[in-house]
Image (tube, rainbow, N blue to C red; front, side, top):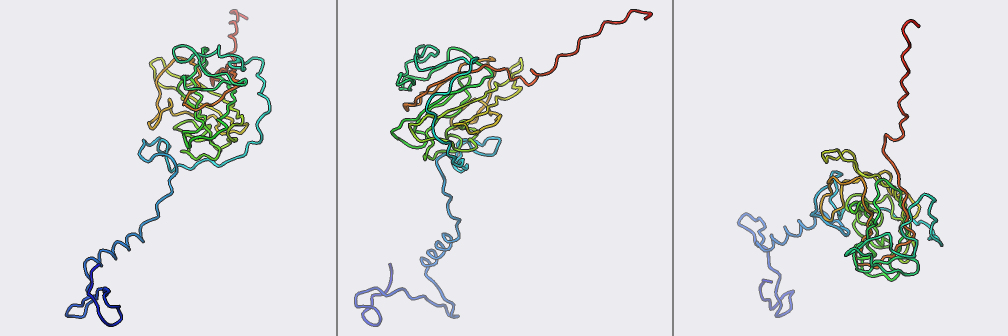
Length: 311
């Protein structure tokens, strides 16, 4: 601070007097350059808009066709809905279902180096950093029921807490995450179509409690030359609450990148992700469907035999 050393008057001996403004010959008030700079800075700060309180996510990722960035930090998070108590027992599989896991073994799956190595714990299978699991059977259009539980002991936050996923064809993901009182980017929370579409609501139960996913998946359709004819579509009920209805998927799941399609076979495996968190799964069954939109058309009427001439 600059100023004149004062020894009398209103200032105590040995203190600095405040700088006196100067006036020019016309009596106009003149301020020191440093004071002018300080005042301008204060005005700019007062007029600047308040910074937005950004949540977890990114501000430098590509923009999707819907206008949001992938994992957009500013995208509103779904409101919370209490789904009610967890089921005391697994939901029984229908008679026509393919039961992939009933608590006894991992015979329906393959894993790293061709072997499923997840732990079997109290009738559930638990991811244990040995790699993803994929079903040996392949599916196209299908209905899936799956029950999962994030670890009861909470560790980590955002994407580092109870993270896994269900991937149709090993590429189209419905996110699994402990989203109970755990903010993360909207398109990455539980039941999101990861990196694309958040669920309508957050229906997550507490960590350690069993959650249910009921998924209806319609596989994408491709032309003979590999061009996309129709995108994949999915309906999701999380703990019995509808969170996606016939939602189109923008392509294969990606992290911090735009999704896209590449032609593939009409059927593929369902993958459960090992993201490093000990997530448990139980009561996993699938019903194969045919959701071709032309499948319910009435057959063309049979042609009538022509009448003989002269009749």
